[in-house]
Length: 303
Image (cartoon, rainbow, N blue to C red):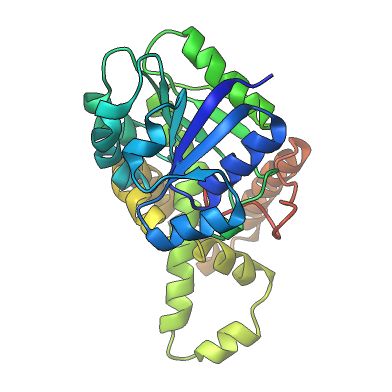
């Protein structure tokens, strides 16, 4: 039995197209409507048979019981304003943005009375992008964090049921806590990856061809993260500025401690830090969060 008769998805990239595939495969919805502002993406979504592709956002959401914003977080406020007059009473409006407070602040003023706005974030993705990159198992055994703006409601339960049908592990988290947690688990790691790859490219003593040819496992993983959608990540860092700067400041202090240990030949300090890091890595594996995505090497880059 479906959770929503009609689901509308605005934004048909990796996450949006994966939701469309997963929702139909799981029987979580009876009908999927989609819209993307890029006409080439709309054409590709039609060719892939992802659902009923509309030529305007208004047409996509008009009869929808649940609407999911799946575009970069910087565009969500304007999208909410555009569709607000066309949302039907009782509908659920949600999103999949990696930042929650900024999205809530941008979207909330445009939500009509009678529409349930429930911010959410599936912690899943790959470094790929576009409608062809999506696949139905993307959310399977991945955490889906719902960050409600008020007490629990039947609408929140329905949204949780929807994501559970898609295979996700649903949890509820305070909205500001979410942004701090994601700053350390996703945002700053991506920032470091973007920076180390840029540093390698700018390093005059080593040619770019040597960097590419002799990439070892560590640098190869950095390049995977750095291959993520630049528009999406630009918006994430601007939207989650305070939490990212807080974590980045702590990281810089810890990096300075490592630098001192190396300079002073303090092997004991280095061993202690590496041992702690290794323990955390093992805990990630034991928690089942190191399972590779079936279509790509690993889950990363679109969180």
